[in-house]
Image (cartoon, rainbow over all chains, first blue to last red; front, top):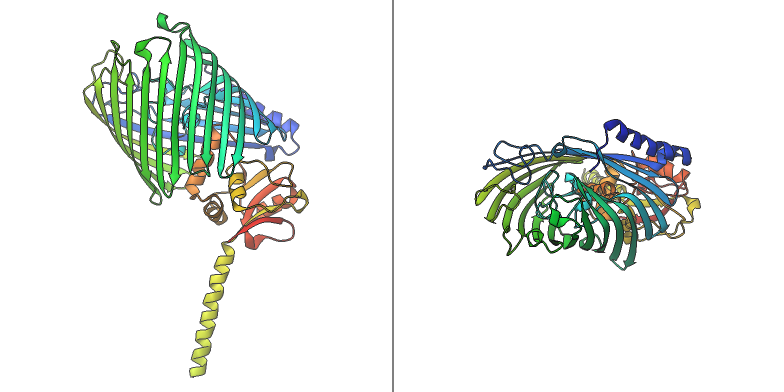
Length: 356
Length: 146
């Protein structure tokens, strides 16, 4: 992923602002600036770092690696064209500021739009806002599907964003809103990339109470460190449901990924979360399951049970606390390759999320 | 003496009823647009879709600029409960998902009913919400919800 320096990012923000200023009569009405920030602390009872290398993963020395922040600029250039961008920095990436996404959005009709640029990868229920802690019940999105920044192994189903174009459409049918996002482009990774990426995301939203989402995508690996991955078809299918009904919240999602014929890279992940909103408190329980390389020489089987609490103790600020138990039945799961993690590792985490 | 007591009780009851009436009236929310916008009345479901960014259109209007109020405004709490069926933090969380994924432009935020009313009165594409008691002839009511 290409990094940019802070002045470049600031210039990008200013350009967005100035272009809108030049084209719109009342620029103050056409521009919106917002941001989000999260700070996390986690501690485990194992010296082997979980879900990240030394100084990034969670271990018994404690980690603040989930600390992150972003700044967002939306500019409505005219009635049909919008430019939006977001810059992002996190401790897991040593606070290297980079463009999370930046794209132009052309409304073809009220229900159909075309986007081009660097666009958030629309896979899974929460990947498009996975860095925004305030938008989710958890401290971090379930790691069995949503690969954390700086995590070298794991399912690798989700990526921050892709560079390309997408066609988005919506259709209202009574209380239902059906959506489709057809997209294509490429994804830049550290030292490699996914080319000829094409995918489709379908959503069905019932009155903002229940959301069903399914995503399928395929791309070709280039420049991969493992020679067998070179030119391999990188395919994934994710589907899930999210509900918020009468103070009950529910998430269930599954993802399957393959990398050509490599048995060791074939993975299946799923999780489910149930929570109950009690005023400003949201206690919740999550079970995550991760299996990779089933039947191969490098088989991983791991599950994580998490008891969590979100407390919206003041406007736009949420405090979170979580207790997790990570059970590794086979292989290393989300611990580093080559390590020998204990069968059970306990983890405690705290987080503070805000949006502004 | 008895007459005075009865009068006092009646006065207190009238005061109580009127205060109840006033508090109810204050809690009414009005969705407003510019009288020259050509906007037609809408139902609660359309208003919900509109303020959750799920639709961009209002019958009779060419384009829509949504106008919201800051979180500290008491009208916002009433609005999120009555129109979007969400608590304030759920509403904020919803919009943070929309904004930070790049899906939608957030509504323009103003400080209070007076600012929203003045903005809507001056912009033919604006649609906002105010406490119904703030409505006057400078704006058109598209929906009034008790």
